Picture 1 (tube, rainbow, N blue to C red):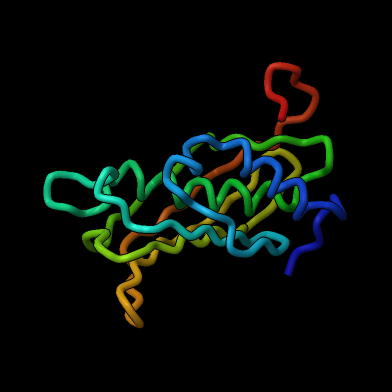
Picture 2 (cartoon, rainbow, N blue to C red; picture 1 turned 45 degrees about the vertical axis):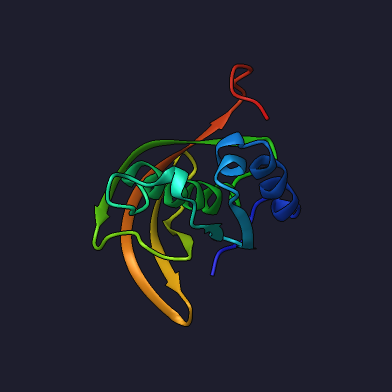
Length: 149
C-alpha cells in the first residue's frame, strides 16, 4: 500500500525495536514489518495487570503506541527518527488473554506528521477479541542530535 523511503526499513525497525527496554521488559516481539504496518506480540504476564487481573491500560497503550510508531517509522527516510506527539486510546473490553497482538497501521503518511491507527487483540486459545483501539499522530525527526538511535 505504501512505498518505504528507506530500502532497509525492516532492519531499521528491528534495530530500533531491539533498543526499547520497555518492549523487552514486556517480552514483546516484532511479528511482522511491512511498509506502513507493524505487528507486535506479547504474552500475558500477571506483573503487568491491574487489580482485576486485566492487562493494565498503560501497558495496552504502550503496546499499540509502539506498533503505530514503528508502522510510521517504516515509511521514513534512513536518517529520520519518530516520536509520538499525540494519541487517543479506546479501551473496548478488559484486556484478558494468554497473549496479545498489537497492530499499527499508517492511515496518512506525511513529510513531518504521520497519522496512524492501531488495535490490540487478546488471544485465548483460538479466540481473538479486539480489546482496544488507538489513533496516534507521529512526528518525523531529522537532524536532531538529542534524538538519535
